[in-house]
Length: 316
Image: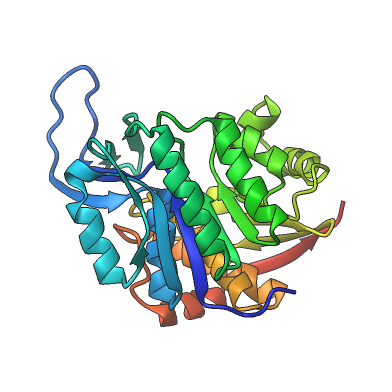
């Protein structure tokens, strides 16, 4: 059992500045008027880092960051008290556009990231080796920038795992498929991403359970499937545990999955018992949909909601 710790490294290989706009309805092919908007530093690993920091973790952030527009990232890391070990590369970090309609529908327009060259990869290799000496938990989250192959990402996961580290891996499509071969310690696909991996749409809980079990056969210790309002499924040691939150007033689903990853990571870092760990992570994620922006405004709210999470062991 890994000792209790507050120290964690989050890795965002392809961060983004999120330009989020709220509007009544999106008129594709014509003009849409945005009621309010914001631009902030993001990317899946950065979001995970923000939540972990709010929970009290000692966070180190790394990955690749464009040197031309890094100010908002630097400000955020300073506010969080995170140690900034990002490798700077030439160019600008991408801007991703998120359009949130009154109905709750979110349209994501994701741009390609910066170009990462061989020298930046060498520097990141060195950074990872150094951080490995003093950290047990590493969160790889998000997509890959240009210049980073799925094989390279998988190699980093394998390197950490072989050195006894706990790697939480949250990605999708080709990066997820290749990364799974490296047997990360925990993965958290949503039902759609899981369906993409197995090559078919998953419409029932039973289908999700079966698909996740094929991943368990690959030697992945923890498989967590997020299913939106239907809650969270966790397969560990051939045992299924399901957590269902109460119905929430959904304001925005942006960052809810990242919040779940942060909650799972924190729970393991604190060596929480299994049921408490899953109910805490599920409550944290459920609260995330009731707010705009990523973070934990009140830990008391999380603990209060945690009491309303329904837990159930699923027999197969």
